[in-house]
Picture (tube, helix red, strand yellow):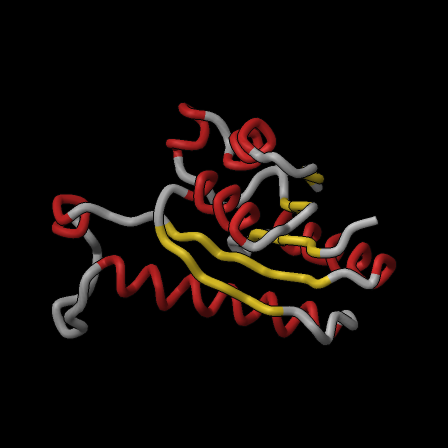
Length: 145
């Protein structure tokens, strides 16, 4: 069956449902479970428009990385609560769909389980959802929950 299942998450309700399904499949198959949060890199121009408070210096990428790390760690804790004691979590930055597919390829994942609609921006409506892009680009099966 499957040996290495990847569950990308953005902390949304659909991502939570995908995590639960991923854990269920990993336990049934005795597979390794990896959780991934990918945050989008922001240009200096975008960072200049950020809503960072003056009393808290830092750039938008640092803020995004910190948030993404929290999302990934919370998902790992939830997976462990559900019985996936071998769950690992990673954070990457860059284009989200490409980041997911590239990570799956690099780490030998043979199934991606992800939510159908996440916390995406208006960009998702204009360019297509992340799950749609991943299903089109992935070399391994993708289960959209």
